[in-house]
Length: 246
Picture 1 (cartoon, rainbow, N blue to C red):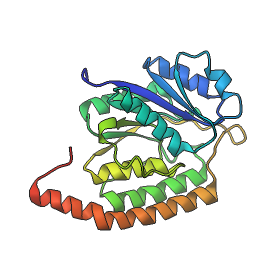
Picture 2: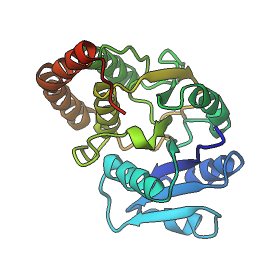
Picture 3: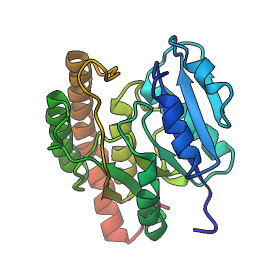
Picture 4: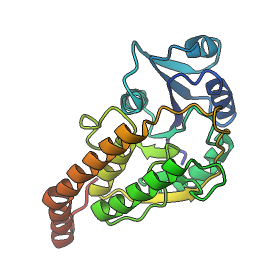
C-alpha cells in the first residue's frame, strides 16, 4: 500500500448537525479529507469553514451523483490513487475505514463496499426493499454478487472508474459506477460494517421513495440492455482472447 495514496470524500447536502462529527472522526483516520458541499442551505458551510478539510462547493444542489463526481475527479487530479467515500448523515462509522482499508490493501484494483446489515433494527423498511431489489438487478447485470449495492461507504480505485461522464445526478449514480466498473473486469468486494440510523424524525434523508425508486427502475432497465449489448459480448471477447481491461 506504500505506493497508494488514499483520501476520504464526504458528499453533503443539508447535514449541518452531523457532517462536522463525521469529518472530525474521518480526520482521525486520514489527514486528507474532502467535503463536497452540494449547495447546502442549512449552515453546513459555516460548520465546515474552520475545519482542517478541503471543501468543494456547488453553487446549488446538483444531487449526490454530481457531488461524488466532483470529489472523485478532484481526488484523481490531485494524484490520489484511492478514495474512501462516506455519507455525511452519521449512519456510517468512520472508525470502520481501516476495515475497508485492509480489504483494499489486499485487493488494490478492486472496488470495496461497506455492506450494512439489512436486518438491522433501525434500518428503514423502504431502504431494505430498495436495496434487495437493487442487489438482484446488479447480479443479473454483472454476474457479481454483492449484499449491499446501495451503500455509500466505499473505496474506489480511481484509475479503474469508467463512464464518469454518463453517471446520473442522484443516488443511482453509485450503482452506475459499480456496474460500469464490473463491466470492465473490476471485482466488487463486500466488507461488513456497522450502521446507525437515527430515530424517525431525527434522521435527515433526501431519498424520495417514489421518484428515486422510479429512477432506479428505469436505470436498471437501461443497464440490463447495456449488459446484453455490451458487457456480455465484451466478457466473451476477453474470455476468447485472454485479454483483460487494465
